[in-house]
Length: 150
Image (cartoon, rainbow, N blue to C red; front, side, top):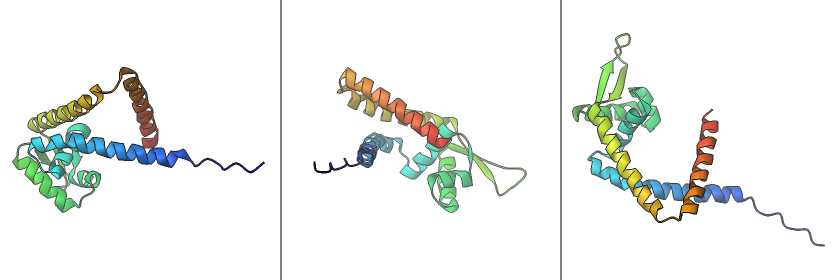
């Protein structure tokens, strides 16, 4: 009897498909961000502040994967627009903590609501049993993410 070929590992294919669909879903939802009136970098930084809490300039730069001078310019623009506040650390005058203002919080919640509405509209065309499967998959992914985050 000929040796049976071992089936290819389906995990890389699944990971590739998940990556591709996640990117396309995010791009579709992020089209709504243009309506916020902010450049994408500022919108992303403000989102970190709204949904992740106050950060120092260096923390924010690291999260957004930009150099500190670039983040300083983004934060300056957010502060001028009234969407963020910057407070100097009295113990270290080189250090600033940046927070979202009330207007920034409102803007980001409005943006999130728009993105969620886009995804909800997409999911409205999915059968109820398939939505239940998606809900179970999301729970699995959330648990895996929590475990990976430690």
